[in-house]
Image: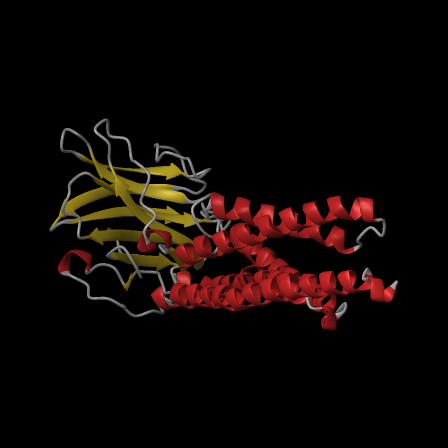
Length: 369
């Protein structure tokens, strides 16, 4: 690597630099996948010399990659530098432009000029070297790094979806050396998860419990219905807030690949929105029967999907075992609370029918004729 004598370096090394990387002015340990990035940044020419090193590679059938994404955050649109061994034992390095989630890391040109792409394998580590040149002064970039398996025919396979693999992205400031990783989106992810748990996962089931177990008591009159509507409306509003937050995350994180979670979310929104149309119940009894059937089917379908999607979301976010246990405890509490009202409503209905039958019998006796 050639040191740019005209460059102005404003950052200090943030990682230990060995002799083989002593000609790099800056470096940073990346958050996951045992990765380190070294660089020299030339302000006047907009050139950057980089060395991307990934250690802990004990199986010599692994590809590594480091990429800059000029258009978004995440995988899609990333301009990647790739290195991996071939079946003949040679280590190759090349560039690859990622256009979709199904893109195989094939050799191709990038959206900016690159020079001197090479790689070495030593001490159970693969290091990629390259020089980049930007068309304009760009000191802050979105970057992503990754690793995965190599097939027998030298084709890079898809990386795993472990927590580290899903968190290997962030921003890098070539001037200050500041790096910001996946944690910049953790707040938004937690808001998304929290709103969905409260809205879809708690408020909607609670509204069903209210409708099922309170309305049988005549003393409540129509109060149960108003409480049910308020509870479901709040759950719907909070759930929609969580859903839109998730859509925003999906747009910003181009590599987001949780199709099942997203599709269930769309179904939830559609069913919950359709359910709001059933707020106005038909007054004629012959139509009320069909209204009740559809309303109940959509309602229970929404509850099942919402609880399922909450668990899927927890597995994606991986907030910690205690959060999953807390939600299971809430569901268990709702289930336990439902047992007593189930018994109570059954007893209440039984004695109400018995009392009514006695009154009917008394009304038909000779003494009242």
